[in-house]
Amino acid sequence: MSLAGKRILLVISGGIAAYKSLDLIRRLRERGAQVRPVMTAGAREFVTPLAVGALSSGHVYTDLFSREDEQDVGHIRLARDCDLIIVAPATADLMAKMANGLAEDLASTVLLATDRPVLVAPAMNPKMWSHAATRRNVETLRRDGLSFVGPNAGEMAEGGEAGLGRMAEPLEIVAAAEDLLDGGRKPLAGRRAVVTSGPTHEPIDPVRYIANRSSGRQGHAIAAALAKLGADVTLVSGPVTLPDPRGVKVIKVERAEEMLAAVLGALPADIAVMVAAVADWRVATENTEKIKKTPGEGPPPLMLAENPDILKTIGHHAQRPKVVVGFAAETQDVEDNGRVKLRKKGADLIVANDVSPETGIMGGTRNSVKLITAAGIEEWPDLSKDEVAGRLAGWIAERLS
Ligand code: CTP
Image (cartoon, rainbow, N blue to C red; front, side, top):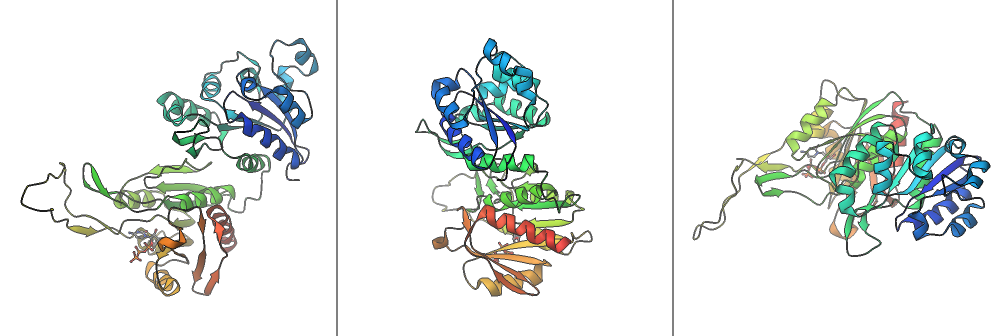
């Protein structure tokens, strides 16, 4: 009962994802929370107050000017008599109101009147999510101290379109609520960490580049897991389609050289976890114009130059972090190659995995890893990348304690 006795005000706004809020209510209550729902007029077009009330076992608040609602608790008490407000789904419209301090219905008024933590689970069409106006509003709300969970990438409920905009799953929202409510175990409080994630893109010319299949899922999950344990995390990410993890400073880069500069800029740090699939080579001479086909001359030669090895640089740096972790993406001899990398790169731990295409690890959501240290090899079972991240953050915290 991780949420026992917690009072949660759930603001449901008008998006198709409102149907998932019914499950969210159930999940929150299963964990012991009391849920008081507030619905916007839009939400009531998608799910009925009857269904929401049946699942939450109580009154559903809908109207700012209802004498009955005002006599019951009143909008100011509604805004304050709770431990956390969750807005799920949060539409682009409601976020715009929140970012601008509008109070024109019960939901927006409660959100303006509250002094409680607010967790926002956006849900909208990918174009609306990426619109400059929404980006500004999200940035404003983050600066105002609100927390976000999602949106995730995937197919939209309305079909046909894919991209960032799907509401986080109910259990992800529950986990984010648990994190916010429980000051939690913070063994990495006061520690600084730098994490690399994703691929790098090495330009061939202004329109082409060399890349790899890394999705950034594992690196992003590790950054989030370290932050969850209280670390002050800088995530240096190559080009990925993932949302920024919560509570993490994100520096976006394209090339290996930029990644190295950003990592060095994040020193001193106590922890370095280098997860990025850094391209080993870049094109030696930069082509500032698009390379054209010349009839009769065949393909142009591509001369490559070696990129800096970021992990090796950090592992041998004068300001070497106390714990340096690298990954080893292998398709054969996983353990032997991992041991060689541990030594050559000056790491304390190499997390080795088999990225042969049949494992589906590269770009997938699961991972089977072996932990290689000077002391030996430990094999973990097949886990989700989030679980690997959580365990690894725990391993690092123990090593530092
Ligand atoms: N790494 C890095 N900078 C590079 C190459 C790799 O920081 N230029 C890091 C990766 O982030 C990872 C570790 O080194 O933590 C091992 O990466 P991997 O690609 O498995 O090894 P490489 O050193 O590139 O060796 P090879 O490709 O020959 O296996």
